[in-house]
Length: 141
Image (cartoon, rainbow, N blue to C red; front, side, top):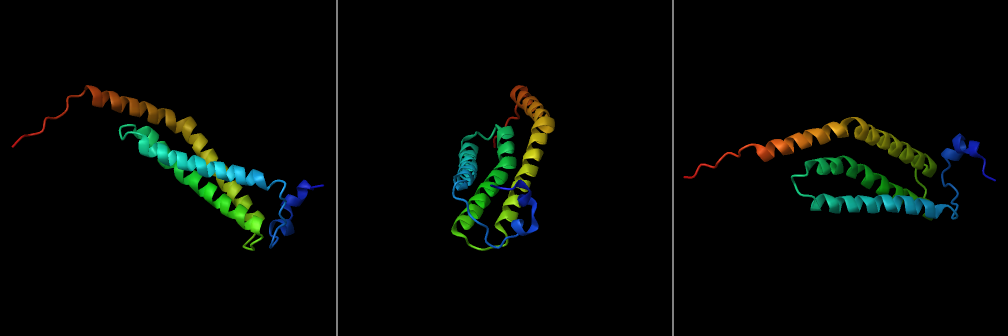
């Protein structure tokens, strides 16, 4: 039986080569693999989006480094743990990765709640302004 308080034990966190439980390994592979696939999808979508849709491109620029970093780092840590390759501390680095991803997620949620509606409104105003303003004629020589 797994003791949940053991998760916070110093020796458990900084164990040199942690034990690998193959029953739950597929969960890490699926989570980090799907995050990395989502990153590749966003790269493709970013290339397909027209340049005048700068709001979508701006969101991709903000989210893409987070997704690629977490997915790639998570897969590397999971592979090292699966192969029992010793490095700093597998559990400690996974805890750090989870903490960093939670902090990034909080910042992204705060952005979507506070700043995104304002950016969306500004983009709509910019679109209307560019649509109805007369464009400057080029001077022919």
